[in-house]
Image 1 (cartoon, rainbow, N blue to C red):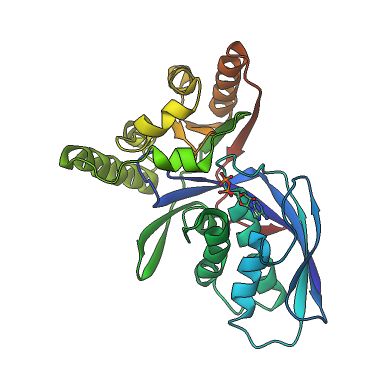
Image 2 (image 1 turned 120 degrees about the vertical axis):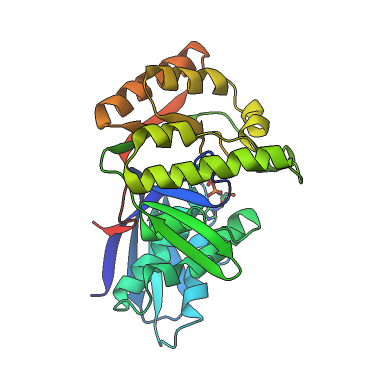
Length: 306
Ligand code: ADP
């Protein structure tokens, strides 16, 4: 096998109460990539379709993640990558993570799986470091491992896969507004109060417990973010209305996807997730804001061959 075409999934990081720790993998939103072995050493991005992104190996997250993996291997050949982007960069659903994770996942398949999915995470994290300055794992871990993942610790890296209830669906809406990453970072505060930390800990514990026991009501009660959402949501016009309308319609909960501006909701059942997509869309329509909306089952496997 010298060539693979793969689906590299979009992901939702944070999931309300799990800031920088929790992430989930989507099934119907993602990029396609073709990875093939070449005689030439190194990584070459031979095609990039759908987004205006750099193709130089050291400027594209796919090249950086792939090189991080190659540097750990002693092989005499290299890889060529074609990237077909469906996920818009900066949308908050892990655009860079899809390319980083997809590259190392496909290379690993072509090499006969020398690494486990968890062992691939540090390579993909190097791509994230290029995109955002920090080697975070909350998008690449679910893209590689599937389902919900928890980054319990970075030093040492400890990633835990959390079970996904069968009927859990995500709705994600991407309003076509630009939120500068620098702004979404600068609104964050260095310190939080003990009171907020206690509320957040309770909710994160509740969410994890609800996922393990398929307790949809508990999942809904726990989808709250005391710390980041109140600060970041100011940057997303219509956020409060979209969230309130989604919950009123029957979503278990809703919040900011990653650093935004996408907003996600979780629902029990596909029908409800579709209804939620409708009310979220109507809210942005009334505000005259264009949007892309997606409904997706949670993808429990991560990247896959197509
Ligand atoms: P999101 O908000 O969707 O998570 P990212 O954090 O993934 O967005 O950031 C996208 C950034 O990464 C952009 O600055 C973009 O130029 C850079 N980048 C480099 N290579 C890629 C790639 N292959 N796919 C997407 N973004 C890339």
